[in-house]
Length: 114
Length: 114
Image 1 (tube, each protein chain N blue to C red):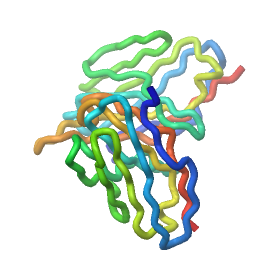
Image 2: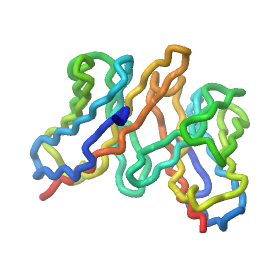
Image 3: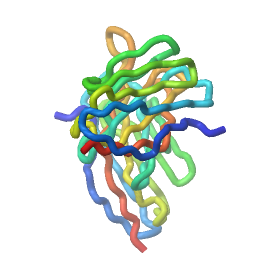
Image 4: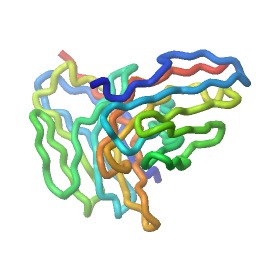
């Protein structure tokens, strides 16, 4: 089982719809969760970070975290063609011996169609 | 502010050649990282430096060396390039150790080893 799993997609949604991107993780001690957006040929850029259970909203983006079920999701409302990109989920766990381990998923490709 | 600056942007090497990838950040971050990104593999950590004066191996350190020159600069060296090192390399930085604060990525270096 991969430590951080994402459906590779592509996930196609029509313009104006809600895009729902999901990520599951295996390490129960994970404490910090991040969503990055990566356009083709570009570097990842941070969209959202979430640290506690529940929803966190920032503009058209909402991150949802459920630690009991070990999943984190990203909702994009009113999807725009400019949202077409690969979305990377990253999960951090604090190690028992100290330090952190940040693991990235392989990403979900989102296509927003006109 | 430039953020995280990587050089070069593109590089072609022959097997056995050496090169150094340079990275500098101007955000006064303590931690710096080198990742490689390959299709279907996601981002994998090569080496990191939690703070000035320290470096540690990541998931895939073989064939690489690093130097944390000062708080701003973190270089990655390939001593004897191999075709398996063909990849996109990203330098990143964060205020504190990864996972506790978001990563900021440079624009990447596309390396081809023939």
